[in-house]
Image 1 (tube, helix red, strand yellow):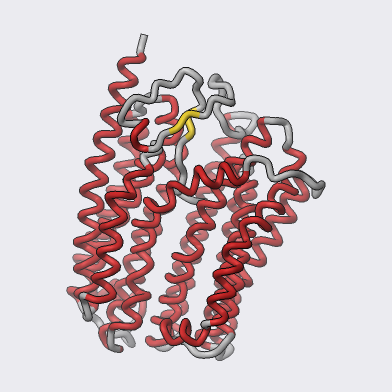
Image 2 (cartoon, one colour):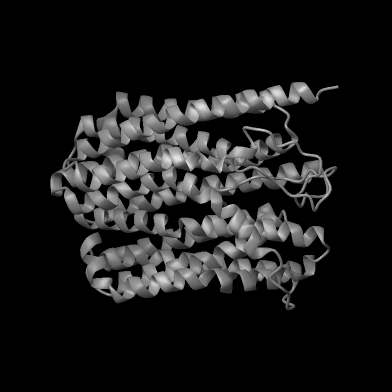
Length: 460
């Protein structure tokens, strides 16, 4: 699943006056407007059930992802865990385009189903996997060729980790293609099972290998095996539902081109959440890196909780903007939920940093109270920024990347060249995330007010 989604308004009479037309919101005149442009379950109760099951499984997957990091922090030496955390963060950045690819495949799946081509969706997933895997295969090849330099940068030795990274890069797109078809066909229960299976396999395999003495190699081996297992499960599910007959790649590349316009905006927020530990792994000394790794792990908890909420609310905001009808109850509920998550994380981090440090990594890691408090404050602000930019992207305001992108680039540059302490990294995060949240709050306020005006003008 991904929050990287742009909006296509299917309305032959749409009036795209500013601010919509100048910010990337487009009109697709090919499909009718009296129905929702998505594959809906047969009844509202079934849709509610599938959505609830998916959210439950997605949250369970995030819990297991947290347990993976917690287990690695406990089982590995501090320097090894910092290397694993850097590798995981780097993989999150590189694999992130696969999420946009999943959205593009989902969009193509919806269109194929609307055109009566549901029996071709299994083959559509296979074609999408092949086509989408080519660019990341090239990246994987370059990564493996320069594996010694990559290993030196991330702090690991040997070829095994490089192989795991390369395999994960390629298979992530294959998996995204199959998840996209499940998403586009409305089979959210199957999608949740695939998501949960990936993280479960990763956790069990990695723990077994690290306990067996394989260190960083074992900790990262769970990623390709988890992706591979989830991929096999996704292929089987699609074959059971749609069969394996040959089909055509209908609408894939146009959908991908449209969806990919949202990637820079989302990457500006999601990417900087992952890049700090990557850079810190090369610039901080042992004690400072230990304290920073603990703070990073704490910050991820808040961020991932907010990420689950964005997955849940993004389709509803997209539907609201398409209909140009302000749903005040939904808006208030979503803002209340994300505020509670961020406030809870901030209170826990600011009031009990020592306890949080001990629970997450134990007493073997160096402790820095101010670093922990500052980093959690920055993470809560970044989580709020992720929520806000999901709303902006849902409305098709993809050019917001021209504002948040430079902030993210400046943040990364200061990480790389301007700071050399863990506290300095945390202060840069808090400042940058605060600036993003402020800009995005203004954009969302304008967007919601504009939606309210349009709803009022169109009312009978």
